[in-house]
Amino acid sequence: MAKLIIVSNRLPVKLQEKEGKLTYKPSEGGLATGLGSIYKEGDNIWIGWPGMVVEDAEKQQQIHEDLHKESMHPVFLSEAEIKEFYEGFSNETLWPTFHYFSQYAIYDQNLWETYVEVNQKFCDEVVAQAGPEDTIWVHDYQLLLLPSMLREKLPDATIGFFLHIPFPSYEVFRLLPWRKEILEGMLGADLLGYHTYDDMRHFLSSVNRIIGHGSMHGWINTGSRSLLVDSFPMGIDYEKYATVAGSDEVKKRENIYRANFKNQKIILSIDRLDYSKGIPQRLKAFEMFLERYPEFHEKVTLVMLVVPSRDAVEKYKELKEEVDELVGRINGKYSHINWNPIQYFYRSYPLETLSAFYRMADVALVTPMRDGMNLVCKEYIASKLDQKGVLILSEMAGASKELSEALLINPNDINQLVESLHAALVMPEEEQVQHMRNMQVSLRRYNIHHWVSMFMDRLAYVKIKQLSLATS
Ligand code: GDG
Image (tube, rainbow, N blue to C red; front, side, top):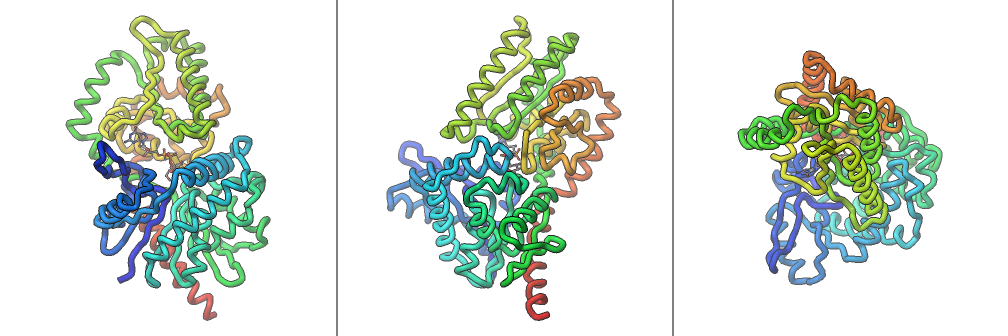
C-alpha cells in the first residue's frame, strides 16, 4: 500500500535520557500537531533527528525499535554534524539570509559540505524506507537539497517540499555562494510550497535569474520535467486552542494570574528568542509608550514570554544579553513598589499556561522583523472565546496577509508602534469584537487540517498533470 513519508529535521518527539532511562515526549509545535493525525495512519511514517546525540550503537538500536512502534524513523546526527549542519549552515547561514539579516550570515565551505552530507544522510534513510508508490513530503530549510537527492535515486517518486520560513528576494538570496546548488536541490520536488505569494514570487525570480528557467502560473519546466510552485498559508489546530482555552483548568489558571494584575491591562508577547522576532524593537516601543502616555503607568503591564532557543549560536547569546539589559533598564526606570511595567519570563511553559496568558491578554503584540507565518498570533485569536482583545501584528509576518483586521505595523516604525499600542488599549469593545469575530471565522476555516489537505491534493494534481504534459 502506498504511504506518506514526512521528513523534517526534527521528529515530533523530544528524546531525553534521565538516569539512564530513555523518555519520549511529544513535541507541541504546529507541524507536529498538524501532521500528527496523518503520520500515524496506515503505514505512514515520519523521518527525522530525535533531538539528542546518541553515539552508542546499542542505544541507537533501542531508539530505532521504540520509535518504529510509533511510526517514526530516526536519523542520528553526531555532535560535529549538529554543530556544522544545524547550528552552523542551517542557523548561521540560511536562517539569517532568508530572514533578511544577511549581515549576520557566515559563508563557510566546511559548513556547506557538512550540510550536503547530512542531507545525503537523510536521503539514504528515506530511500531505505520508500516504495515506488509512496509520497514524500520534505519540510524546511535544513533539507533544501533533499528533493533532488531523492529524485536522483527515485526518479518517479512523488515529492513535495514546504518551506516554513520566508524566501528572500533575489537580491538577498544571490549573496549565498551556493545559491545555484540550493535552487537545484529544491527543484527536485514536484510541488514547492510557501506560506505566501510573495515568498513564491521571490523563489521564482531567483530560479529565473540564477538558473534561467522561466515560469508560467507557477509551473517551471526544467527541460526534463515540470513542477509547480504555490502558496499554502499554514493554519493552526483551531479547535484544539479554542477547546483548551475553554477548559476549567485554563480558567482557573487565568484567575490566579489575573489576581496579580488588578485594574491593569495586559499586553502579551510570546516568541522564541530570535533576532527575527523584533524583541528589542518591541521593548523600545513600549518604553516610548510609557514615556509618552504617563497616564498608563500602573495601568498596563507587558507580559513577555521568551522561549530559549539556539543558545549555542553566538548571535542568540548576544540578543539574550540585549533583551536582559533592556528589560532591566525599563523596569529600573519605571517600576513602583507594586508595579513592574514588564514581567519577563525566559523559559517555556505548558500549553495550559500559554492558553491562560492568551485569554488574559487585552493586547497581543507580535512584531517580527520577518516571519514565515507566525502561529502565535493565530493561537491568540483562537483562544479569545469572549472575542475581546486586540492584535497588533507586523506587516513582515506571513500571517499579516490573512489577518488584515489586526492593527498592522511596520516594526521599524517606532512611532507607529507606540500609537498602535495606545489605539489598542483604548479601542471600544464593540470594535474589538467585530475584528476578532471576523478573524476567527477565517482561522477556524483555514485551519491546519485544511492546510494539509490543500497541499496533498495539489501534489496529487501535479502528478496527474505531469503525465498529461508528458503525453501531450
Ligand atoms: C517557524 C517559522 C512559522 C512558544 N512558546 C511556547 C510554545 N510556543 C509555541 C507557540 C507556537 C510555536 O511555539 C511558535 O511558532 P511560530 O510560528 O510563532 O514561530 P517559529 O517557531 O519561528 O516557527 C514561523 C512556523 O515555523 C510554522 O511554519 O509560522 O514563521 O519561523 O505554536 O505556541 N509552546 C509551548 N510552551 C511555550 O512556552 N507549549
